[in-house]
Length: 414
Image (cartoon, rainbow, N blue to C red):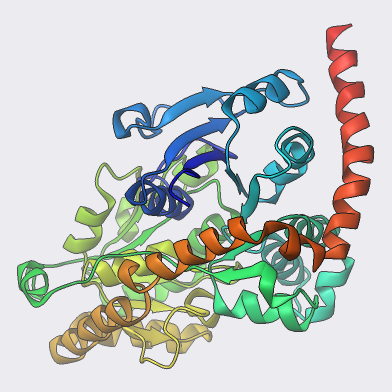
């Protein structure tokens, strides 16, 4: 397979690894393909941002593309990639029919990031003040679109074991179309652990998360209105620093130094500010996927207090690096105890390192993943023959989406 080394990534946005877990995840995927000698082109219809990574400095060709425009057809024909990776299902909807039409032999991979339909269904249930139930997914338009996208692709990368199980048991997706690929991290050695700031060298609580992500905004509101006043009552000198990219005015208005609640905005170095903090507070009430902020906490040797949703699928059978508590009073009690108890804190830190080194080592996943990719490339037609529903969806998509796109393009020209 040495001659098949050309990858096109079509991004929903340009990667910002310092702004979001999704950006970090994308760079992890890129590194795997680069190590295998792939020539990589990253294309996106998004506008450039001030915080996007310099792809060209990493040897990756950067290409701006347009939605609903046949110029993409000319671009992909000339590029002739052997693998196309779609960054989230919305991008697959826009471009997969063009890829299938112009490069039918290219392996089509979807990186879901997380299951958007699960996140949105949970959010809707939360706002309706009720518990989420699996049947909520069936009424979601996003679920129909997202599952169709998964079926159209040759392989979908799923970051959470919980979501793999959901896709197989609830949506009856063939396991051959799904691939579990969590965060891909380096081992944390004893030497690295010794260099981390100690319990005494750290102070304050922290929450960190991109504010364009609704679960993060909701978490900050919950911290401000409910959790933090109760913590502050028991720890009068404590401070909670809220970091995150793209804070809106409504976020900035929560800044209240008198109560020790600080909106700090974007962190120049997220790992540095997490390492200086003693506890990560993440009372996440809805969401999906793996939580980058909690992985970052473990990497930084910072224990955390989170919820069942926050910790979902992250630690497997291993004990959490702190506490998992959904009930408000218990959450506050755990946060205060962990903040004050050095022995408990040290034990929690070690548990976080164990989770990273057991469940997220890049070396445990990269080789098997690339073997799967090369196998699919060698057996692509038989693989697609076993996915008739996906072929059927692709057939209809290439007619409905194709002609809608052509209509929009013609309308724009006029």
